[in-house]
Length: 285
Image 1 (spheres, helix red, strand yellow):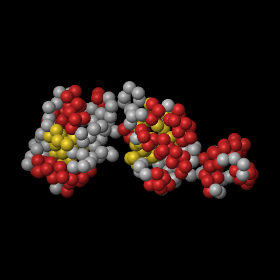
Image 2: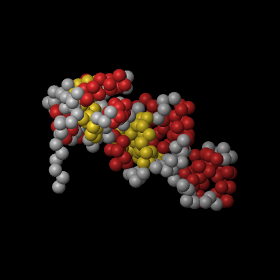
Image 3: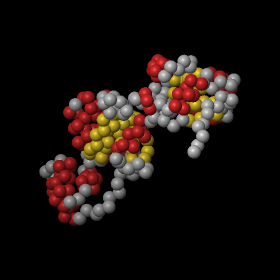
Image 4: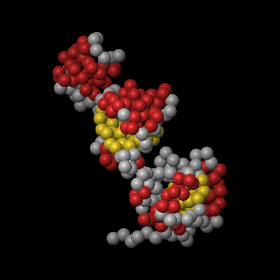
């Protein structure tokens, strides 16, 4: 049995501490112990973190460290660490640095040989992946897609043949645009799991091909509220070779029908995967 690791305050340390993404009970006992013991907590939003600390009766001082002041504030915090103080780094929810501030601060600590101790804990990307039912042996985290349409399309095109499971964060107001762009680039049959409001009362998982997912999201605006994670199946190298008859049927149907409909009909006739036919059809347009 491993012995409980005690908080060591004999050497100045930066502790990287995950905080709950919704349910406050998801914070660890070790995290609470360190938050109580350190000299200072560097927080993305001090008002947000103050509510968490109040809930657990923690009175440690707070200092803001966010995207707009990180470089300037890092040097101030480094001075405190060099003078023997201990600091905890937290973000508003989840693990710091995962689409949150802290990278520059942690890097500078490493550069000047300040000890950095990470704690395991909540992370929306991993939480969603673990329950998505999409392969988890190889995956890549891509964060938020670009906000501009062209940049978003170009980025998605760079991932067309990525075989690993893809993980994205997405905002409420851009979700539909991103799903439409995914369909444009990857086709309507790529399987996606939408996870929203993880660990909260309205936690939801919905698993479907892109076209069905988009329809489901558009049917009810409540389905795109809150914090959203998209888990996307990776690209599958075609295992089948299209027969000349299947290709001829697809091309005949394409002369009269949209690609999606022509693909679905040909797939049904020849018992072929729709993705395989769709990719072939894209190449003919």
